[in-house]
Image (tube, rainbow, N blue to C red; front, side, top):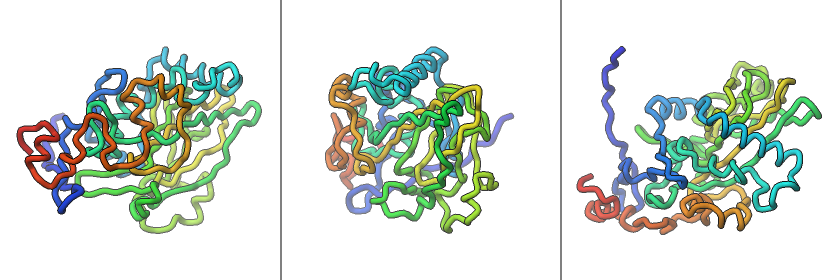
Length: 317
């Protein structure tokens, strides 16, 4: 079925100086990841769904070989961490490192988190905060409790990091979580739960959210190798894993704006040094002014058209 095109225009975003407009040209956003793979931009529907819901599931994007290698490494971390070299002993070590700037992740962060003034083709416009393996299993009762938290991000102060901001045609997610499910997840058997849309809620949550079976809670089912992205400002919770056939093997990666920091974690220096230069920019110090590799911060934040043109390399705005 052919659909009529819906009228759209560029959003007016205030830049740093004099109330001028921030130039947002797609070619100025980082186009490839550290492995040279083209960034995958979110579709219009994916942007709409993430903005209205606060979370999105993208099923089955990893290959079977990648899933096996990554899952095996996670079991090694969980069961025999001493067998892993110290600098690799985390969930961006070994084969998991390439998940940090997977093309789909970079595409979403470019849209919902990146600052155009502090990114370039050699530098990401966002940071990576933390990474965890939240392994869960019925065997041995390796579990996490139901614990609702966060929400109401539209009205939080910026220093909180758990904020959500939007203006017609553009949104920013603040702290943004990426979950890689390396085993299948069946709905209702222990996946992450969300109160859809609560990142924009103006009211406190009702007492009924303390009931994991409350109809406000949504969750998902997905095959191994799936990706869930959510703003940390949406109300969410873990839940007990009940699948006796398989374990839950999820990687939880957290991203933030370049100018903000919520956690103190940093990668082992030896691991950081082993990364490609572009991937290392995920872990640079958290400040904004001029914090870009091979970019023009002053030109991008200038209120003057000729400076914007020079910084972006475009012939017109």
